[in-house]
Length: 354
Image (cartoon, rainbow, N blue to C red; front, side, top):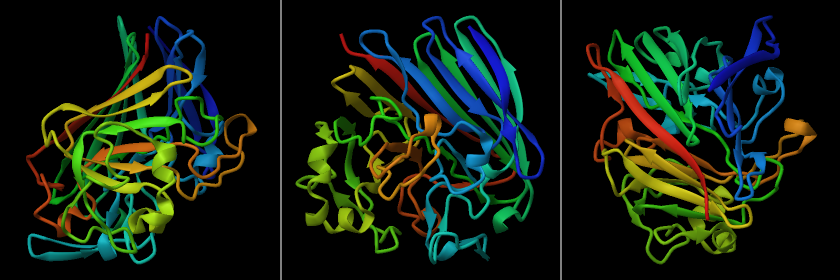
């Protein structure tokens, strides 16, 4: 396998960004930039071996410095929402930035995807890796503790994209990282993902209020458009948006699924596009996953001059439940303490049908 690199533009403060591309023996590739450790492209074959980019994104770093819907982002310190941006840890109450109405989202106004990371590419036999490292200082976005973070992307000859997140801290803090790539298995410029079939191995979601903050309980998916246990064509789900209050307020799917597998490593979801034969499995050790279908996305100047519109892609963000610090009944914990290691892995496995 091989890793190439090329310039990816210059940031507002004059830093030169680099785009790293890992290419396997079939010509399939994954490109990631050291600005934000952001996933820029994922190029994989269809059943006729035609390659297409199935990851939405942009052609220059400058588009990632402005509002871009978190496309491809490495999200941290805390993926998803924290109600009112508040949590209490060891008797101390913390107030985070309110960058999503009256709530905190994806680490604040300047999350992990807004910083330059140190890149360490490593070519291998059958698998390439790129490790991205940065230190998030104590008080960044008002989080406590200095967090030392490494995110490692690996890509192999079987088209498995593995993302491993590692972190340590010198003070009790929160850590709940995820990847915010938008997938469209027909190609990033295909348009709506209505023709994608999504399977999610979950019996319940965490219902939310009007600010998309969990209300603290669980809602069974049976009999609702959230039931994807047997696979659901997204067009059929979107057709129920106006009839389902939780979907109507989000404009589609922007909801957290509590995974049936729990904290064990296992397959939790898959996406299939019949026309191309492309198929993607999601394998993770995280207990929950946010399904987001680009509900209000309108972004110009995307790759190749494309304009992205609502429902142009779907995100499968493996993580702990949103607002976890204020809901101890949810599985696992997002609290990280000195002497502990945050270490979690998610694999996006790309395949084609026969």
